Length: 123
Image 1 (tube, helix red, strand yellow):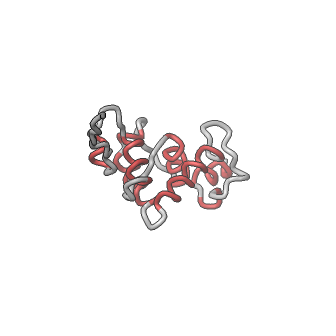
Image 2 (spheres, helix red, strand yellow):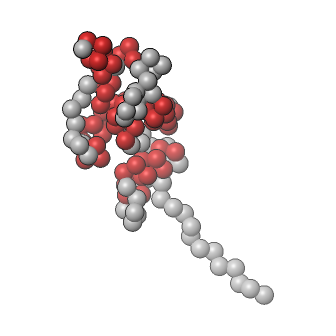
Image 3 (tube, one colour):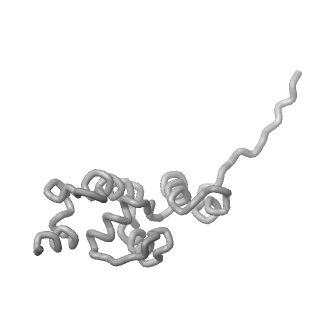
């Protein structure tokens, strides 16, 4: 009869613990911490970064992952009871409407408050 060995297979779910794992960066740590750990973080990727920079008219560092002000803004925008939904909504809007080339301004539900859209209209 084979002996059953119980191994501990619990994975960390906190942002800080996840960042300590090899190969886990800010986006993955944030995504897991929000989805599984229930923490309040911004799942800041290229799409979210582009949308926030354009919407708020920000000049940021080239590498958005190292831009502390952008990360802080992203957290303020998504923080709240529906943090996961806010994150996913911004990620989707960024990938569907606020594309890097040829953004779909006319269909974007955020265009009325968007600095980038209004700046383009004034040209």
